[in-house]
Image 1 (cartoon, rainbow, N blue to C red):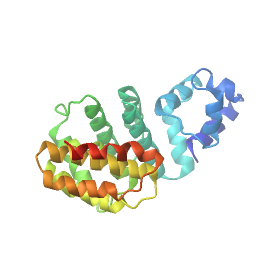
Image 2: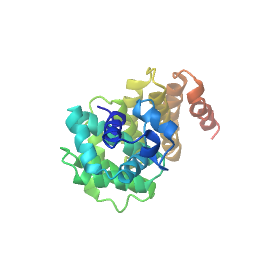
Image 3: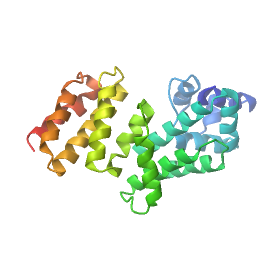
Length: 240
């Protein structure tokens, strides 16, 4: 069961129209797409929607897990919301998601809490207040990945600043080689993000011989309208 389907169940139980249900939280037209699984609702809007209809956030996610019978799926959904909150630079959403996790009975939730704490530190542009053990656990989490998936690829891209250059050279080449042929535009964007980060790191550390490798990687990714911006800025590094 998806978030949209569970929201619909709650709405029907309260005998509300979609317009009554959403109030002024989001537009009814957008919410229609959420119920039909055509659009994804942000963490902040989801929490506001549940609160406005007197629904416990913890109970909601508990039912989502119970009906879906998939802890893995619930983790993916929480990670997705955390990623989107991070890209929106929203500490408020990240804290809300963190509160949900702390109160939940999700097994191994410390891994997700670790990522959220690291996201907040990156948004603050200050990882010094993170416990050194937290940083080391974050680094080990990625190093122990034998094969990246889309989720762990995003995590690595977001936390590349936690690693020294040699570690990044090892991890980035492994990740790029695995996904360079992906047909997913979303994955291609992440791969190009990793490549751009590595170009910056290599130039900052005067490892100019390594820049050619990452420019070659970028050239192997087929240009498409959705990734044009990412491809277009690569040549800038050739004249730096």
